[in-house]
Image 1 (spheres, one colour):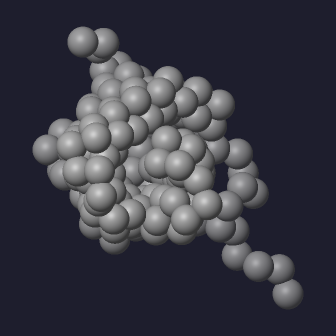
Image 2 (image 1 turned 30 degrees about the vertical axis):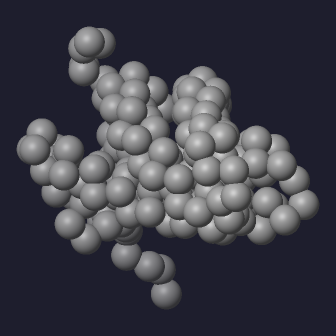
Length: 172
């Protein structure tokens, strides 16, 4: 028995037979048309915060585990590198999925921010260790998490305005 033709609306530029990703409830998607600028920003900020919370917790946990074997700067480098790659991919697939930024561009753009993030977070931890020489790894981890929040705000702005810029959005 032949099946009925697929009447699922397809995004512009998609090919026939390719799977269509359904929109996430409350998020922007092809079925709902172009979302208002305010709702798009709300969606992006909400996803970015949720992914950021998970990433910060993951980095803190990994840092805390690695800190038993390695000095602070090395533990931070490894934990930040691992979580930056995972964070960037999650943001590419969820937060900024409505843009056409290819994975290479996304990861290269995020990689440029990696150095800034590493310098700021390592500087915060090393400065804290200098000010409080007997601090525990748990206290260092708290300082690392606080510094990561500041870096995250800058990261969101740069990713949104430059790396995952929607077509037609002017460069500032």
